[in-house]
Image 1 (cartoon, one colour):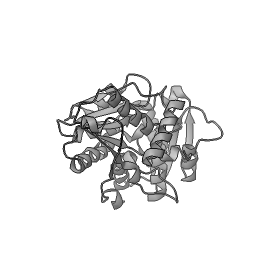
Image 2 (cartoon, rainbow, N blue to C red):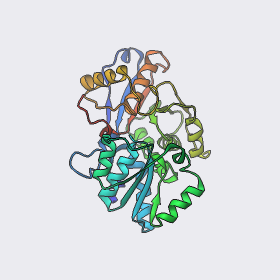
Image 3 (cartoon, helix red, strand yellow):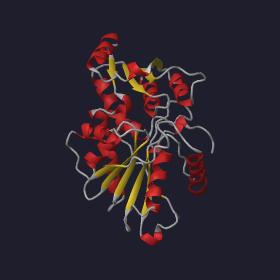
Length: 306
C-alpha cells in the first residue's frame, strides 16, 4: 500500500492547437490522472485518478483499525464503486457495493468490473438509498458489518478530501502561474480537496455532471470553512443528468480522440472539457489565462473504442 503514497505526479498534456487560444494568450493543459493507475488485473484502469487519491487514506485507515471489509455506495455507473472493487482486490479487502436503483440485466461494464473484482453488489430502491447518510441506517450497517469501513458515496469524507488536496499541490508545482483549475463534480469531495490546497489567485471551477443546484452546498459542507482559493460551480454542462449523453457530446469525444489522442468518457471528463471549451468560445475566460483541466479517469465505464 506504500505505492499509494510514493508515486510520481501524473503528467500534464497540452491541448494544442485549439482555435483561438494562441491569439488570446491562453494556455490549456490536461492533468492526466487517468494515467495514475494500479490495475487489479490486466487491462483494468479503474483504480486511477481522483479515486486513487480519495481512497488512499481511507484504505490506510481501514488497515490501521484492522477492518477487513470496504462498504460503500454509488450509482450504477459509479467510478467510485469500480475503484473500491479494484482496491479490495489489490489489497485484500472484501468489498460490498450498495447500488442506487434496481438491478438491470445485462449489467453495465462498471458493475461487471465490480463483480469481476469480487465485490458483493446490493441494489437498493431509491427511497432507501436516499437515507444512506442517516445515522440510524449507518448504525444498522455497522451492526451488520462490524469489521467494515463504511465509506460514503464518491469517497467524499474527510479522508477523501485530504487525499484530493494533492491534485492542486501537484498542478501548482507543475504549472507555475496557473489561473484556473477545473474538475468535474459528482459528490464534491475532489473539488473540496482541490480548493483547500489551491493558493490564490488561482481559481477552482467545478462542473457538476448531475442535474440539481445542490453542488455548491455539498462542497461548502465538505470544506467546513477551510477553503483557501476562489471557486465557483458552473451548472450548464450536465447534458441531461448523471449518465446521460447526447450525439453532440459523443461527437465531441470522437473529435478529441482523433485530434489529440486523448480518451474521454461521457459521464465526467467529456462534459468537463466540453464545458471549458464552450466557456472559452463565449469569451468567459480572460485573455492570458493558464488553465489546467483534471482528467479524473473513469475510462473503465466507457470501454468502447471511439
